[in-house]
Image 1 (tube, rainbow, N blue to C red):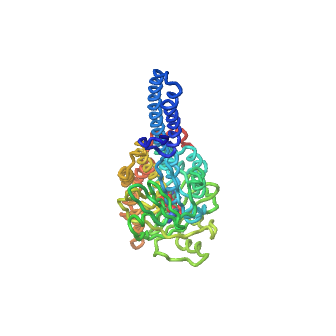
Image 2 (cartoon, rainbow, N blue to C red):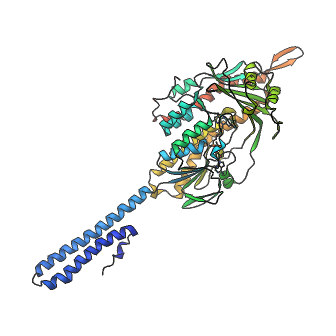
Image 3 (cartoon, rainbow, N blue to C red):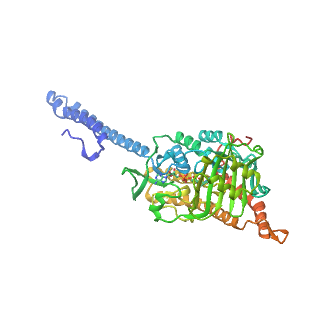
Length: 503
Ligand SMILES: Cc1cc2nc3c(=O)[nH]c(=O)nc-3n(C[C@H](O)[C@H](O)[C@H](O)COP(=O)(O)OP(=O)(O)OC[C@H]3O[C@@H](n4cnc5c(N)ncnc54)[C@H](O)[C@@H]3O)c2cc1C
């Protein structure tokens, strides 16, 4: 008699509330039906009306209970957010986490070692962020983009381009300012990787980024994906993004282990405390030579970052403390602007690493799992593009996931998720493929770099080099504009009023 009506099949929390309402109704009903009539049988007419009121009250109770049941279920639906798990907290992983957070997704980042980015001059040095990447950062979080631009050193407002290593003469100059200005995008900067990481980490929040958390595996089924860390912890989500770089564990688990390709180049990087006389007119210069090239860029605060790439066998090693000497052997006869920078760099600020890339793959994921940045399309750094492309990936991925999210969580099936991830990779494939091809062609063509041929005492122009020079002067500026402004037309909705083009 006093039990909760089972036909309503209520949830636990709802049941206790509905139960008390029903208890009230049942007592009321009991009193009406059995107690009142025995007290005063003469109020028969009244009894009829009480029974009617009783009936209406009961109906109201059931309706109220049903309504409350629906509201709770709706709240549950609203609260259930799509959960994105990200393996890797590099540039790509952190920017994706920020974009996901700002778009209302639930997000977790697993990073094996945040201290791997140890600061300027080490391993990878500062990173150049082109207008395209900065424009996307503005769209994701203008406050964060402002901090990044504030901390960076603007190089896009000066002359940038390619020069001959021996003579220092310009081969091609690129205007990074006009295309950015036309597309109303912020102008290209260079920023310390450590500063960039700090800004992004602060914005994403330490509760979202799990440090010392190496992803070692994952499993997926039609309802979820589960990530496993090296200490055995497991985390469940709806989507997994492998943003874990060129040696990606997620990629390995998806497509099997594949050898990375050695580019043929080793790279010395150094940070010189030196302010050259051309600092106000030149942002960066790439000096070209046969089988080697040298990149010099202003990075602000009275420092110059340089990278010396040299073609040689894999894993050749220097004896300790002789990197500078070796570099002088390789680049000693190059122009002053190169040798001065090497000479001005402390030995302990010179690092060396071999450069790898991988062949393009044309599928980046399966089911609920996809790849982003270097994990998807690792490339040689001669165009300084990998990080920018990773940021572009983030935007495209979030756009696709947002279009899915608009339909509400209930509508999100495995099919919807995998379709959104496929749309993302299709949208990104052509651009990343083009840049990947150009980086490989660029490094290969350096082996034929020869401005002159010598015939007895005659110095004659080298015809293939002339063609190469023509390509650099005519085609490269278009390519650079395309790199810089990229998909700017689809960024028109973003407010770029604050784009600081004049700095
Ligand atoms: C010498 C050099 C100069 C460059 N200059 C530029 C430049 O100027 N501009 C530019 O745009 N690009 C540049 N690049 C390329 C750029 O550095 C990369 O493309 C970019 O860092 C890719 O970002 P990412 O987030 O995909 O990968 P990464 O930055 O490599 O980040 C991957 C992260 O995943 C973590 N990780 C790896 N495995 C796991 C795991 N199993 N579990 C958890 N975490 C894991 C790593 O610790 C790392 O933090 C340069 C590269 C080199 C080598």
